[in-house]
Image (cartoon, rainbow over all chains, first blue to last red; front, top):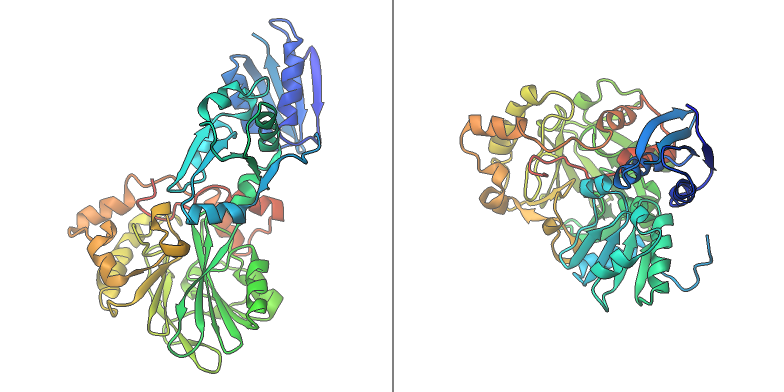
Length: 75
Length: 382
């Protein structure tokens, strides 16, 4: 999936993955896509809940060798 | 993360004291909504609200609106990080008496509080270990420098240290059945202390290790004063479920009988097969036991089951009056109650069973994840 910005939060603990992601998303324009990479297992549930709550769109989620990737489209 | 010198820390042990003393506390749980709805801290004088931390990143105004002025506030999350983040901002906004929970819900899930149940007639003492965050109960019989641990939890160092403090050597580790809601520490404790590990053979069909056969007729003694632990075969939660009568005073009922509910028969996928055994155990076998035995279960389901000082215990005769699961006169009603409309199964219960059989060896971190959440071993835990 092609993203306009990649946010690397590998090695960071909660709440930093979402803090960083939120900051990056704020700087994007409507329709643009953000990719977030995290190694924090807890971020899987949190990202889904956060995206839903903020009314953006979770385009995809995948796991690769302990790295969780989220693709979020800004509405 | 910023330095946290001005923040108050609360440990799981301190929180336990507050819950047991029924002190007032306001909890702000900042985990996401589904985790909160699944499992949270409870207490009779605890007020709790859930606002996910990601709703408080820009401003804690929403939280300030909901937290009563002057309340003692504990911020809680899964591990610790987010609660610290939110607690700091509440302090910056001028709130006093703000704490965060050290180690988050993980540490709450793992805290064990030892409480004394009573003296044994033959000399010695019986202790109960209350895993308050998850509802599991373990026991230690100590007599004359020897100890037996029943339904040991994963945190084996707590039991080792406790026995050491009491000057006792752990000689036996017993499991009432093959557990599905938590990882047994029995085998590990036995390995570390040289104790014997006992398991009912009917639950041990697929295990990958050696064990002592826990069967009726094979009484276990602790200390030279001979505290007798008498196994009573009581199937229904599992096919091997075995209770113990300790010192002719106490009935350790495992997951068959709780204070406000009864065991569920479905965690090994055999509800239909085992429902008859469950009824036989509860309505005939237990009825034939001395009714003044004090029942000590392996779990509690609700915080209201905790008595004075956190003890979970009630006379058998009283349970036959009060416990709804012991008062279903029609067999068909009973069958429906224990097979239909049961609460959700405990987190990772199949993986936990396989771990307890020795078929899986998850890392410490994986074990912790598998055990997160409530135990849900009872029919009425909804």
